[in-house]
Image (cartoon, rainbow, N blue to C red; front, side, top):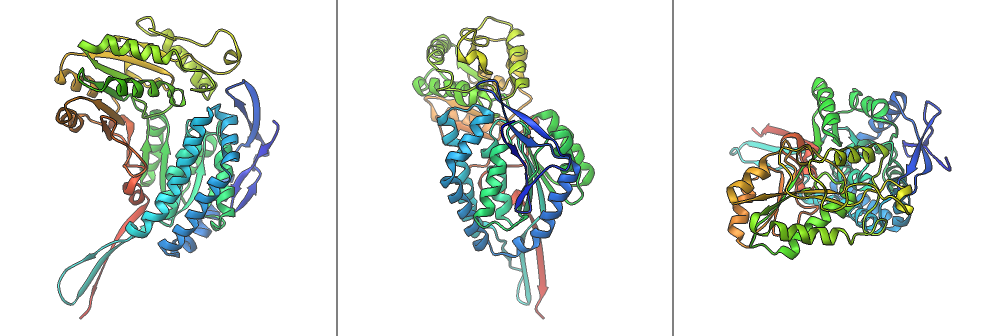
Amino acid sequence: MTTRHDHWIDGRPEPPASGTWLATLDPATGLPGDGTAAGGAADVGHAVAAAERARLGWAARSPAERGAILHRVADAIDADAGTLMRLERECTGKVPAQLRLETDMSAAYFRYYAGVVRAAGHGTVIEQGAGVHTYTRYEPYGVVGVITPWNLPLNQACRALAPALAMGNAVVAKPSEFTSLSTVHLARLATRAGLPDGVLNVVTGTGPDAGEALAAHPGVRRLAFTGSVATGRYLAGVAGGRLVPLTLELGGKSPLVVFADADLDRAVAVAVTAVAANSGQVCSATARLLVEEPVHDEVVDRVVTAVEKLRPGVDFGPLITEAQYHRVLDFLADAPVPPATGGGPYPRGPEARGLYIRPTVYARVDPHARIAREEVFGPVLVTLPFRDEAEALALANDTDYGLVAAVWSGDLARGLRLAERIEAGQVAVNGGPLTIETPFGGYRHSGYGREKGLAALYEYAQLKTVSASLG
């Protein structure tokens, strides 16, 4: 270990109670990286106590006061983006363009919620006639636990932290043990920017040791989790047993539906992005390409040509964890058809020393095959032809997931008609933008609750009604 990174609790670094640190790995080179504190129940208890002490003072501040501090946090992210990107790169191997995109969006989350909480973080007056004053108000839960994954560490931390803090909650965050460095540094920056001590705490460590302790702690009154279906299901049981509300943002096997009359150039570009962006390690990746039969083979040929031009370390990075690398290789070994391109690791060169997998396309896959149904979470695209709108809809909805979908059609009415019948939390038609302002979340095994947009602000607030007789 070159450097050891402590927890961030009550506005200062705190070493782990266990006295041990976890080693990290640079997945682009295979070389060992920095160490992160191996947290457990004692560290979580310390962090929750700090958050409990800080929460009332933070909640008592006006939305304008909280917003002003969150704006300063966004400024701090921008000012120290270089450090955040370096820390993120060391444990994820992401390429510069991906790092810049995610860091810029991280600051934008804080700016967005700093602004909207002033306009929308309040209740309403209910007219009940003369002599009565009835109104509603939004109140924070208190201490919120946020558990984030390894694929988009800083970005997904900010996605949850910004609305939770804006509504006046104090937070204890538990990032993935593989990619904790940028989240710890974010908390340091937030403290420097004026966020009161104890309002944002970060405890690092494994899920069984630190994550489970956070979810089970009696002082935590709300939870947010992004990650696997299996872990989400387990945490739902923990939260349900405690009657604690929970936001779950889980996996996806999202369809990209392309009709023959669509703008094929743009549709192909979106399909290639699903493979290249973060090496497919994105829960919302449209990894199932459904193409109308008359143009299926043409679209596949164009996607394969574009994918084969992608450069490792420039256009896409490695798989982030060794476990995920081997999981993707297992999917490839189990594929029912030969790949149209890719299909394994790089045999030589610098990429062979890292956790790189060649961008892969499987064409005309049986929709019942494992690789067409389960989330691969790697640079892998499968294609399925369809004959008409009815079959396109059936294939799009033939999944246990329901996170996002995309439709490309020259007939906008058909695109919108299909979008309203696809069972997913977000559907983009002909490249419609899905941004910070648009609520994000899933159906079925993709989870419940919503991140982003105004919807996320209200996920982190309780609605109270007050009614007073004036007589």
